[in-house]
Image 1 (cartoon, rainbow, N blue to C red):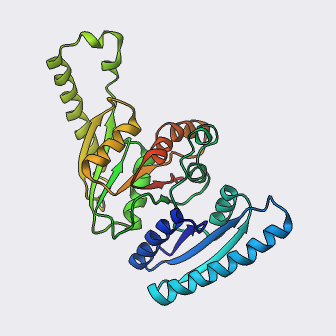
Image 2 (spheres, rainbow, N blue to C red):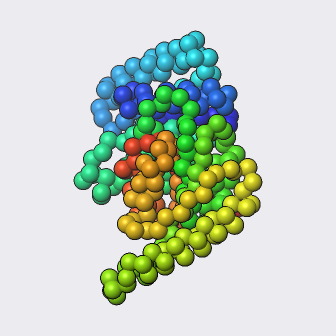
Length: 286
């Protein structure tokens, strides 16, 4: 880990992300790159005034972090809308990790255009951490998720290489399908038969998960499986609460049309609803 980029708008939400960024920079020895995007779709006089204020604020913040926290800092300002400005800066600076504060939960707006975090994750090639929880110290329990795909294997290998939570307990969750229980005749299945079927599916899923992890030797984690009683995102978030996890790790499945649909239906729902930190890992070509 050489460079961590924090996109800040100087709000209280960004302050939470800043403290997590400082903790991780301390832990990894990475340079902390402080980014602010100035919206340039306004009168030039207003933009110039905000640019001057932003540069001063970033300079003072960087100096304070260097003096008080011993963090090596760099600063950058981009003229653009928030989404495209973050994506542009990430492409130019190539951070190992991009950190964002929690998004404003605007239900109607999110439903039609998605959150800045979701759009950013679809467009950058680095891991993205959305900080939702209070950054009081190192993460204690990390919940990783997998669909047992090659893309997920690649992403989990990336997580092991980042070494972000070396002292944390790790669990890994696979949500398996039990679609037969959703068929029209499923309501006629006796309770004992239903549970027997599910236990067989759980046993198979545990074996598949164990086999899947055999090639990921640096990753030591407790194994958990659940069936998709509701939707996948809800099952993941429920498991995170039950395990008292404070970091949730998910995978972005790339940038094609199908992948965007998958991201929208699972990872997007997690990002919009999670109350703990969420790290989204990109899938890089092998």
